[in-house]
Length: 525
Image (cartoon, rainbow, N blue to C red; front, side, top):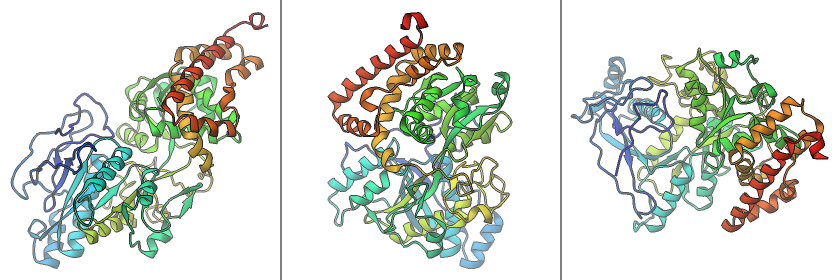
C-alpha cells in the first residue's frame, strides 16, 4: 500500500498530490490509503499522529519531517490568541481537549483538505470544547472510483447496521451523489433554513441540492479556458473572451485540449461549447472549429491547463479551479476566462453516508462547509483573516449571499455565477443522452485524426472558408445528425462491440471528409 507523494519535477501545484499526512496541532489531519474495490472492507494503514509533510513552493518536493510526538506540529490557525480564547472558554489548550474523530472520503486535493480541516478544528474546539482528528480516506481515482468502493463496502460488510465506517463523502461532481442517494447509501442532513435559503434548489437547469437533503452542493464548477498573456500577444491576438474566439482562425494551432474519453471535465467543456449554440449542428460546427485549432491533445484536463503555464501552448480549455490554481501561481503570466453566459455551473457536493460512526460530528462539518464562513474559504485570498492560510483554493462558492458579504475580498478570478448574464440554462436531458456520444465523437473527429483535422482546418483558412469546404468540414455522420439519432446511438454505445464498431466507422468518416476538404474545386467535381 503506497502513499502518493508530489513530484519534484512538476512546476505547478497539481490537482491530486497526496503527501503522507498533514498535521494540525490539537487535531490530526491524516490522508490514509484504503484498498480498492477488490477488497470487501477498507484496509487502513495506521498513520502516525501529528505527522507533517508540508508542501514547499510550487515545483519543490514535499519536505521531510514525518513523525513526532503529539502536538509537535501545529495547526497554523492555532495562534496564541486563538489558544487563549480556547483556554478562556474551556480551561485547556487545543491539544489538551478531549479528542473525537471524523472520517471523510474525498477526491479533493490536499490544499482543500488542509485548509478546511484547520479551520473546522478551531471552529469545533471553540464551539464544543473537543479536538477533532480528521482522517481522509483515499481509494484512488475520482468520484466514480469512490462510488464503486462504497458500493462494494456496503455490500460486503458484516457490520449490523451496515456501515462503511466513514462519516462524510465530499466532492466528486454532480453525477455520483444522486446515484448514492437512489441506492440508499446516504443519510438525510438537517440543514438550517438560512443555508437552504442561500443555496438555490436549481440553477442553470441543474439541481444544486437534493429535495430530501440527502446531498447538497458545496461549491460549483464552471468551464472556460486559461491563456498565457505573452504568448497570446506574440500571436497577434486580442485576449479571447468567448468560445467563438477560440473557434476563430486566429487561434489555429494554439490550443491545448484534453481527450474527452480520458477527462470528464474536458467532455463537459465541449458540451458547453455545443450548448452555446441553438441547435446541435450549429453547436457541433463551433466545437469542430475549436478542435481544428488544436495544437495537441493530452490525456487529462490538468495536463491541458499546464500547457499555457509551461509555455507549451498559448490557450487551453479547462475547468475553472484548474485555471484558478495556475493563475494564482503566476497572475502576471496567466489569465482564466469564464465565457459570460456560455458555461453552466455544476455542483460539487457533500453528504453524510449511511450509518456514519459519528453522525453529530458529521453534521457539524457539513454545517461548517455550507456556512457563509466556510463558503468564503473557497475564494478568499491567502492572508485574509478569514481566508486560507497557505494555499488559495480557487473554487467558487455555491451560496448566493457570500458574494455580497465578502465583496471586494475574493480572488480577482472568482466568478459570481449569480451575476446577471452569467447563467447559462442547459438542456439537461440532452446532456444526459449526448454526453457519452460527444466524448466518442470528439475522439474520432479530432483526437484520433489530429493531423487530418489540422490539415483540413488550414485549408479552410487558406481558402477563406469556401462554402462547400466549410459545409463538408462541419458535416456530421448520418447516425448522429439529429437529436433523435444521437439518442439511438447512445443506446448502442452501451454494448462494447457496437461501441468499437462505431468508433471505427467514425474515424474513417472524418478522415475521408477531411481529405475531401483538402481537394481542389476541380478534383471535387
